[in-house]
Image (cartoon, rainbow, N blue to C red; front, side, top):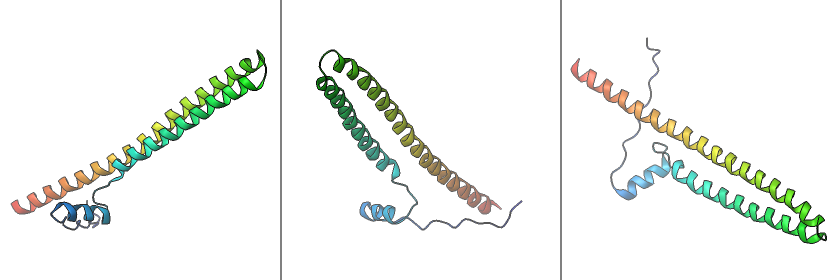
Length: 128
């Protein structure tokens, strides 16, 4: 059962390294987000590492602000709580980035499926 909906064919991809790269920047036939998401992931991890140093500095600051033993007793929960929060941030950031990678992998798989269906249609039309 066909509803009469037809997908348009993508324009032909130019040959050559620079022309192909330029074509990829202008069209959305090949997504470059997978490469970019890795950069974004490591940038986010660097920010989380900087925040981790901030937590360590806050714990040391609490420890030296008050005289012993109260400063150390207050610094330990600050350090442990900060480490737990940073661990949760690492897991959330990783899952956020993996979600976007999975979405773009699905898009690539659908593109390959579309090409296979078009090739099969072309083969059937040549036979019949």
